Length: 217
Image 1: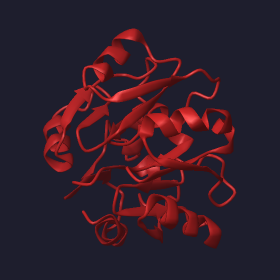
Image 2: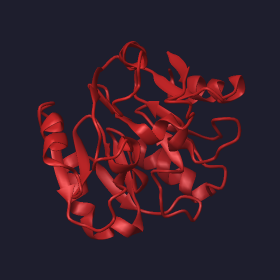
Image 3: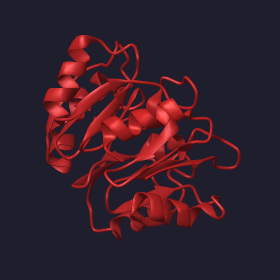
């Protein structure tokens, strides 16, 4: 299932939420959309800030095995995540936007060169094979793509080698695409797991068909 939403008039829903197949963590002021997220993504919904901001999608990365957190996360925010019983680690690095720096599913993860020193820790927590790489010369690999366990949508500047790496490591189909009517920074526009996806209201019908065809939802 795919649903179009804006959060407080903002179509860049992916900035504000993180999901796996068990829970979705999203900014607190989403009004009546909590039930929509629950029904579309098939998860429990946690309303919380991350690092005292609404930007969960930027600050969190993970899969169904574990979650990667920035050192700026607050104690009460951390407690909510710990209550979900998922493996976690807090990166002791000045680079706090880990959601923009890791692209992962339950089969593999691509890590930005910016976090190369944290590769083994990330690999251990996520429980998958990892590789250090850019995508289309972009170091913020988590910002230019979105993946679940079936498919990955990626920035149109992705190179053939990038696409091959995603296919081989994450074991998914890959398509170069846009969302929110032409935006190539895919993850800012979508919150997706294996059960469903939330996209910005400006996402076109053709763009939604990419999600259906490649991500299988």
